[in-house]
Length: 523
View 1 (tube, rainbow, N blue to C red):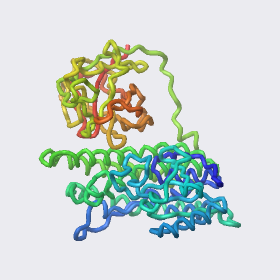
View 2 (cartoon, one colour):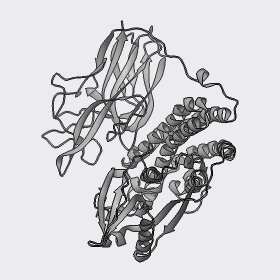
View 3 (tube, rainbow, N blue to C red):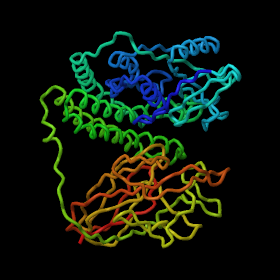
View 4 (cartoon, rainbow, N blue to C red):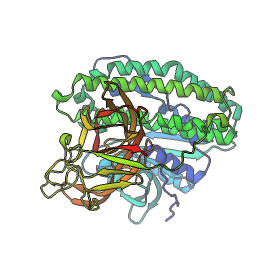
């Protein structure tokens, strides 16, 4: 029995399709990054009878495989809905040539997936690396789960098979630098000429969403709906486009392009926020979906479109040879010397309405599905320290009390004073989130600072936050599990250090849970 020794590799974007492509390229080593050259494209289709928000969204990933073949020299064939017999014949042919095979599979039939035997999710992708004739099992590498040497029986294979993709190097393929650069510029200009206006129309109509109709397209599950999946694509596309810019900068000697790739990567944050907000709003009772909350969604989409236009105009200038050199694009770091901070913890217990840390009463439920953080590892003195930041944590030492709040524009009074910065302990749901926290002053003025926080399941920051505390996940039916979840600390300086701050106002972002807030003064 021959098994291809393919190692699972995680992609920057975290999508199972991207994970599979990166892993397959690890086998062939021809590159894959230029497949994202059109990833930013967005089209908003006109309304039609029965059309949902998700069905009207068209993204630029549809031609990613064409670009992978064109710019990296792969021959790719996609076979949709083959019979199990046809699929197995194709798999065995490819394996005999030493080629791993991509398998599009329904997770209902995937034993290591959390949806196994529960939900039908048709879009999962994995890799076949062998076939065991003795047991009649496919041998699988699943990069999304970072697992190899997995097995699927013929019965499960027949039930879950959705499609097969073959990927082979193209004989005699050569790289054309000039053609690539012209194509990159064409696609980018095409995107900027059309997509921002489509995004603004999307923003204008998002308030009319029918959550029941969207969920129906996802087999009655909003997080499996085309809308949720396409918002995830909007998020990962900007991460992947940033990855592509770094590849072009390195391969073609355009260092200034690498200097602005991080700005492109940050364009992904609003889409994670929008996706998370919509998911959280979907689970709210309809009477709580007020106009202000829905208007906030539209404003976030319009802001994302505006930021994208500004950043990508810089990218065009750099690719076109009209941009600044790399030294001019990188700001010099300034040295301020060591300073001493005075931390002022803020009491948020009065606005806490959710129990997120497991207790003996069984009332902890941070996500609406009964999950919570385990208690082990809580600071014994009630003060959580992360570098030169600290927080009162948990917000209450009484296990019967709530310990966090979902952001809903709540106002938090603070001891009047002159502060140099704000720090927040929080985590997001349904992906990372970033939004404006408002500090109000005694004279009636205010200022806003942007803070971002990763999903509580993720260790990877989205906006400079740090992992502040980690715990085992508690599941309602299983108790403490081996899965690890996190809280994050982020901070921002204030510009109005001479004014008296009196209040903090949280954003309208119901998927962001705040566990603690501190202000700080600088000596």
